[in-house]
Length: 450
Ligand SMILES: *Cc1c(COP(=O)(O)O)cnc(C)c1O
Image (cartoon, rainbow, N blue to C red; front, side):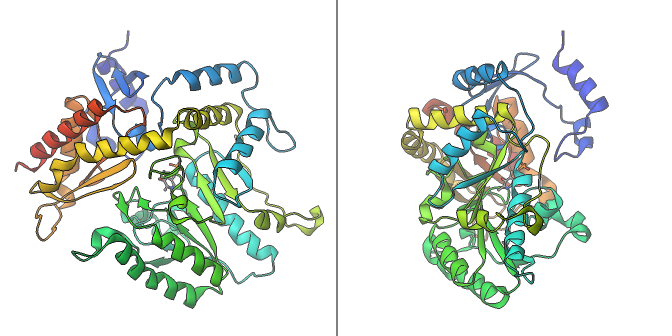
């Protein structure tokens, strides 16, 4: 019989965990989870944790969701996986059809990969290769936004801008053009999100004007820069960017890996700017948090630029062994079914209102400089000085104190630096939102007390 203690000891003797200084676990226990049910996780000693961050933003409809479980069990007895070059299967075809239907107009082609970073790599390579197939070989660069995050593989890391993850590897990374972003945390007091985002767009317009000859694409996270501390901006930026990308003949890559599937209040964040990107990267919520899968949606125009006789050498010769995995595709189909059958986007509107209400008291907290929300993502910015917005020194790890306190009260929050955020699965109840907020409040009190 495993206990927390026995499994932790074994874990720490053989494992190396992601995004972790393993030495931290000399003082903080690692938590072995025995099972998940709905929004709750349970460890080997019987402690329960409310999963308020959707297990790193992937889970949409709870752990051990009956509908997704049933679909997977059926798929398991039919086909688990098959090579996806020269072969296809029903779940992959149906899912692609579904994705074409539900993503913005014009995204009619689906290319599968098996995680978010790989999807970003695919979009970058496809964009570059498109221009090359058209003879525009001088287009070799990408434009990205300050504070952006697009994954950890070298190409994705290069187009990201969170220095915590990037700086160490800088000598290995391709050069990119980084443009100051529309992050509304920095707006003047009294300035609206839309005014600030519009004002900041002039910097993007300048970059495009200056570099369009050599730029393949602009890559952005629409509306919320999640890993960049849940910073948010106005949909007007998407509209302006779409128009400018058209004007300067540059692709627009929308990385909706985190914000897709309802996180921002619409099924896809791009809908709020009423735009269609040239590439849309999807992963995380795509399978409801069950299995690794990603998809890059793109247009007929881009697809056609690769479609020619083999001898022309214009094909996209990119693959991953698990491309189009049947179990993952089936989980994704079951997930999208839940959206449609249960009118999730409409229901989430009132859930988002409840989340705002639950967090109302944080606005006046002496160590909170901002409470911001876009749809089903709510973030609380912890600061040393509310008036000047002076942050706590990162070395003090205040967010970590919130994390540990919340865990001891049975809530899984995982602050990004000093930003505490709620990103729960869509099955969260009003009572659970109040519990999350109460524990976060107590956690903040605990973290700021000295
Ligand atoms: C998580 C994330 C990625 C990377 O996805 P992985 O599956 O972790 O490789 C890329 N872009 C955004 C916006 C993300 O949030």
